[in-house]
Image 1 (cartoon, rainbow, N blue to C red):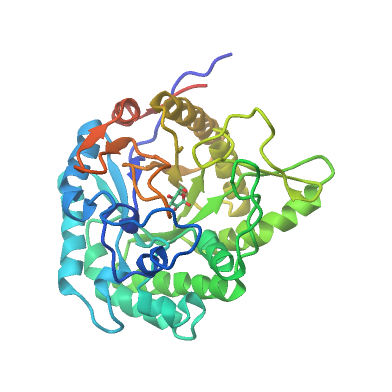
Image 2 (tube, helix red, strand yellow; image 1 turned 90 degrees about the vertical axis):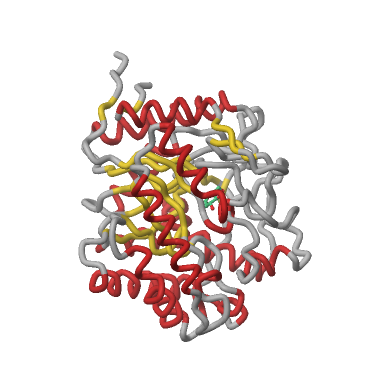
Length: 401
Ligand code: BGC
């Protein structure tokens, strides 16, 4: 029997996500800016002007609100707020506060990420998240950034995908992991233990600080979910593989106000570890398996890992140059989400990645945007998928299968 459309509960956050470094442009005091100019082979293009959202954020928000969305997740940039250690920019704090007010004025609930992969260069040069004073430095930044989230913000994501950040550090310092014939990474290396511990401590300190500084603010972090699947007979290997890359980070969310789920594809584990995408199976521009069911599975796995913790889907989407494929992917993902919610899982929002085409950590080629951004003129054009998803948001429904 086909299911009817699923009606979302009142207050459900339905919108899209971006991150500062990927959209703003000229984030020159950040570690990534330095890395982009280091000659490392993973960098095909530097971020440059990105899509100039530093100046064009009002246009981005106008479009999102006009499309029918009620939420916008964006990040604030530590490297702009504290470009040199101990030198804080009041203008940068004011800038991000204007963004929060701009979102609220347009009827978009701001979901603010404090750290989305990038750090100031001075922080990383001094050892980054494994340095002894990492937590103190992060907290100092947060103290200065507090006015940004002091009112009108319901949800703060402290750190985006700490598991991927700790894995990136291992990749950058230990060499590239094996790839399959399409160039997609085959599995993920072990997260760096020092970075992992620094991130966990930083998250806990940020939550404790914000609980006092901004009572009522909901805080959590967002974990990249790979929807691990065991081939028959490889259940124990799969559990072990996912525990260090995902499980330990999810468990941290046990005491949090919410947990952010970020899902794109699945990883199957069999003989020898992660398995390549089988021949002939559809892939995205990232080389990842086209697998919309990942979102429902990720939400269910997260609910099982941290029972009772409300879930916010903080990222889900697809890199494609065919917008019908984006709709087909997202509609499958949302059907899986609706099924999980019908089964009683407490999901508070869905924020699509991404609101707009952006800098995909080394290249502009994988286009994830609901909104197309012209790389020369920065002109924005909402794609049909944006209108389709915005209409669902306006109606407050998720599609059936
Ligand atoms: C990150 C985004 C990234 C997206 C697609 C997530 O890992 O949070 O910054 O662009 O996935 O790869």
